[in-house]
Image 1: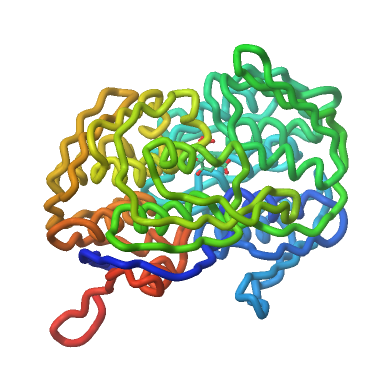
Image 2 (image 1 turned 90 degrees about the vertical axis):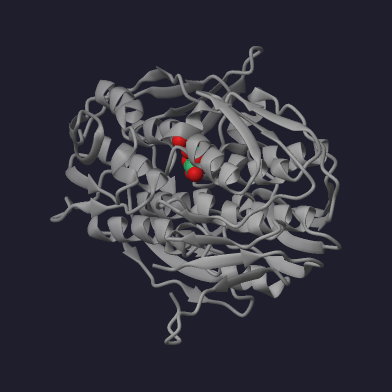
Length: 453
Ligand code: S3P
């Protein structure tokens, strides 16, 4: 068990690069596997979630090279695609670890192929609901057996000739949208997914990059439809993965809430479907300059210059939730140090992430002295210029809870200790080292015999 302690810090400074985007990394491996030819990925995230997807794909007969670092420190890997419908049936269960994205997207792929696979995962993934993808994929012809109805371990028996589907998703979920579109790639005719508000569009962008036609429409009520025509084929294409805005969120909030800080985070994706946190922080008065905007590998990226700021509480529009769904834990930390009340409505999806993030963040922030209330779909934090801290938290297999609590500890009066920090490797390997490089006091505790705990 890795235990980290964050102690009050000031004057964070420096220019840093955050790791590759998790959503784009999963998709680059999966879409590369479905394409004919070789896809070289530059900037791949080598977090545990993405490595779980890579090893599941290898079990399905795909060749993926071991990621190697280039001179800029980015990881490069090559995928030799097998083409649609050509996966080998895996002899052993596919263990997706902590990764909801890996599990749900691969279930979509298996559903539209003629093979069966058993999916397993860690304690957190085994509690997460799969009905949201079982229903549409079932209508397309796949069959499922799952523990407790819709939990892992779960077996998907795919069909070689899935039915096309026009799916009205009740959730703004990129995982649901992607699973259905992936199954639709081998169906005859048009498969569409409509969601109440557009979720991240990396699947649509990457399918186009692999030469599949994708039609997208945003309707007048803000709902959104993405469609593909099946019996498609994907052509391999190299990918450049931008830095993950969900990971950059941690050093950015750290710089805002600590005194005399000024940092630059370079090459961060500013994809509009991922930008909600940054817009919200700017609305709260954050000193964030978006500079050097450019397009890299088909995704808009920028350098973010972030300075200590006096934040003010606001009501975050519920319509923004999908574009910042993974960032509410760290936003609630920023809110704890803001003046006044920050109200976050429309966030019921947080209850079915790696943990119930509304419940756990409420508990953590309260332990640290902050005033928090919640309902089934909202959280309200009343901020103060200082917070007590002094708490010990168990990360409960949730990387974003672990990192959020450590960021809280960088501005609190007493240190914050988080156990179970190995979960941070899920999305942000080298988090502690990167934070230390800008002057944040985040340390692995050393026991009396000199071993790290
Ligand atoms: C993701 C979609 C989101 C997000 C997750 C990554 C993706 O989940 O929370 O971290 O890459 O498609 P939902 O689709 O459940 O909203």
